[in-house]
Length: 324
Image (cartoon, rainbow, N blue to C red; front, side):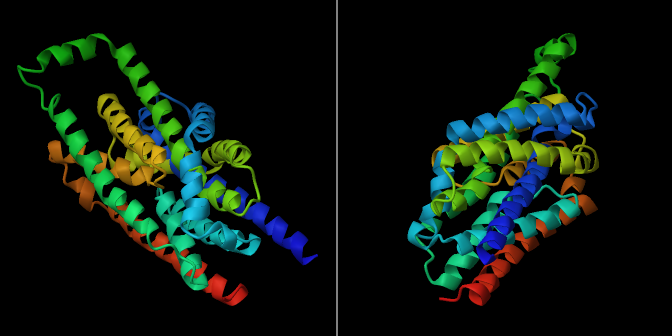
């Protein structure tokens, strides 16, 4: 009876975690199009589901391996350990979705695993030498790359006037580019963030990695349907209403960096990469309010609090229910 209850709780945790991740991840992909009223919520959900699914099954395995058996040895990834990791991660992410903030899901998962591993005294500290440099370098690259590329086209000048003439005369192609870039970033999210739920499960041998990536990828879409509309409104309208060109540039830069991280097996935050890219656009346009307005402060505060809560929850629950 106890095992049946634990199994039910595990399934519920996976479902809850995946739904909340889907709600958080649909915003970086489609918020600009949604805010510009180019795509409706349900259409965004359908495209988001398809490309997250493809990204997961094609390029999600390396991050699954990192989260499944490189932070905590697979020999210590028991059923109870996985359950605590997923509950701790999902709690932090749910708080972010309640606040209508796109959360750094990879941070939340890594911190939850770290709390559990520390409590078990089985944490592989060496893995942080692999992960942490990328958590610093890739967001900086996102800012610098976006700043450099956007500076080429903004502000309008004699040197780039021909670009504006082409843009104004090809608005249909501009919208198509924005849509394709949204597909690209949804695919990138699938390559990395789906593994947050699948990694611990696969590490414990509770699910086949390919089947796990496929199932959780589909659940992301359901999360986008349930939670995504409110978060897309926050990102697409309240923070900074991006034009289609700047939104496409941000998507191309951040998706490429995220896929690079996925190939290397680095659990990386999509929303943080995108936040730094948006800030680069704001810096060029001298829109310093992006950093100081209430919504932005709420996002940064949530990014600090939720991983910390996931870590504490993982540590405490492990000590209470598993011990050493």
